[in-house]
Image (cartoon, rainbow, N blue to C red; front, side, top):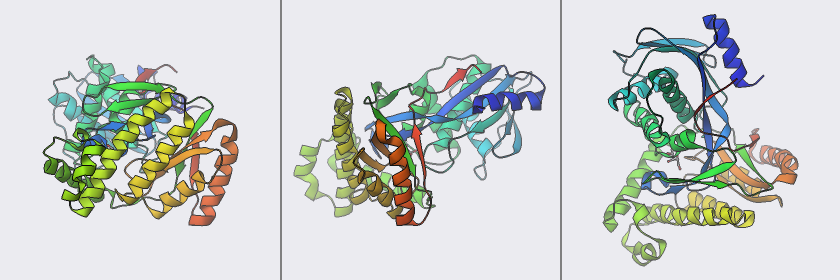
Length: 381
Ligand code: GLA
C-alpha cells in the first residue's frame, strides 16, 4: 500500500469520513551546488520519491488539529493564538508555517488531518522542508489563496529560520515546492528562477545514507555562513555569487587561510554547478560525474564539512566502474551522499557499495535508488 493510500485510510479511521484533500511534498537530494544557496549562488537538486503526506478536511472553527502517524501524537493549535515554540516539536513546523503565512497576509482557515512521511528524519534529505511545504499546501487547500511555488518556499524557510530559529538557505524549500518529475532543477538562489533539466538517459540516482548523524552540524553551518559573509565583505560584494574564480584567484592571498578556502569552495562550486547544467543539457553523464567528484573534494578539503563516514562511502562508490561520480550531499558532517550510476548496473552497484562500506566503516548504510518527483501538490488517491 502506498503512503498516500495509508494516510487516506487512516484518516478515514480517525475522522470517520473521506478526507477532502491529500497533499504531498517531497524531500530532496542535491546533485551539485552545495553551501552555495546562502551565498546567492546556484544549486542543482531534485525532488525525491519520498515525501510528507497530509490527508485533511476543513474545520468550521479557526483551529488546526493534526495526528502524526510517525510520532504517534495528536496536536492542536489555535490560528488566533499561535503557541511559541520552546523546544522544536514536529507540530512547531506547522505552527511556523501558519505564522509565516499570516504575516504574509494569506487568508487562513482551520483544518484537521493526518500526517505521515517516508523521508528519513535527520539524514539530510530535507524532511523538514517536506513538512513545511506539505503544511503550506494544506493551508492553501482550505484557505483559498494563490499557490506560487517560490513564495511558498519562502514561507517554509521563514518558518524554519524565524519561527524555529534554525538557519538554512532556500534550496530545500524551493525544490520541495517546485520539483518536476524526471528533472533536476537548476535554481538561481538570488532570483529564485528555476531551470528544469532532464537527468541524463540511462543513469540512476542512488542515495547513500551513511547511517551517521552529527549533532554539531548547526553550529558548524552557522560558522561557515559567517566565514562566507566575511569573504564577501572583504571583496566589497553583496555575496560570493558576485565574484568569479579568475578574479578571486588574483586576490585570494588577501584573505586569511581558512576564509580563503571557504570562499574558494563556494566560488568554484558555483562554476561547477553551471558546468553541470551544460553537461546535463548535452546528456554527458561522464562530465557531470567528474564535476560531482570535484565538488566532494572541495567540500572535504576547502569547506571541511565532510566526515570519515561520508568520505568512506564516496570512495566506495567512486571505485565502482559503473559510477560516473559520487559526492556528499546536503549540509554534511554525516547523513547522505549521492551517486550518478549507469542504470544497467544499479542493482550490483547498490549491493557492492553497501557491503564495501559496511566492512570499511563498521556500520550498515541504507542505499536507495530514487526517481525525480514532482514538487508540493494536491494528489488523487
Ligand atoms: C542544508 C540547508 C540548505 C543548504 C545545504 C547545503 O541542507 O538547509 O539550505 O545550505 O545545507 O548546501
